[in-house]
Image (cartoon, rainbow, N blue to C red; front, side):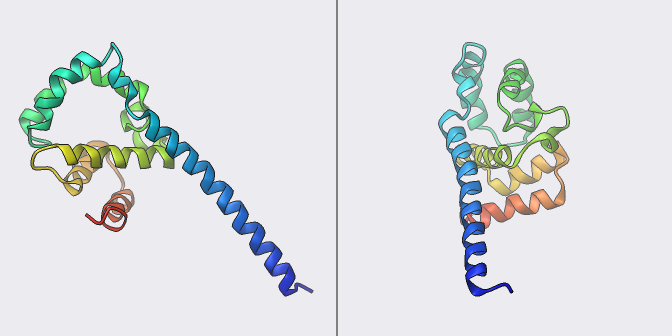
Amino acid sequence: MYTQNDCIRDTTQHIEHVRENLSIIIEQLHDRAQHHDESKLSEAEIDGFTEYTPKLKNTEFGSEEYQSFLKELKPVLTHHYQENRHHPEHFSNGYRGMNLVDLVEMFCDWLASTQRMANSDIYKSIEHAQERFALSDDLVHILKNTAKDVFRI
């Protein structure tokens, strides 16, 4: 017979497994936070980002001018995407090749980008990304819910 003590034992064991699993995710997220976009400081990327970061910062996200700057920056971006798995372009199958940790870093990256750009917000960024990367409606809802519920935006 399954007793209350059995239930307590099993539930306690389950809680411990969840804690261990969350700790693995937290450790990986901490590592991503410590090393995010370090390739931008490399010889292969620093000159391009030095020139184009202020241009992009003062341009409306998704505008013709913004797209033109991205086109000019393409060789640097190609290297950047190869070195950083939080970008859908890193994978041959786009965001479908990403894991949950990649998606969290990607979202935080998009949010930080909107925080430094003129006339930009995370919801516009998510909608633009949906078109650009063919994000599923479900993922878009999750990203928007994260902005609303976690970041209170």
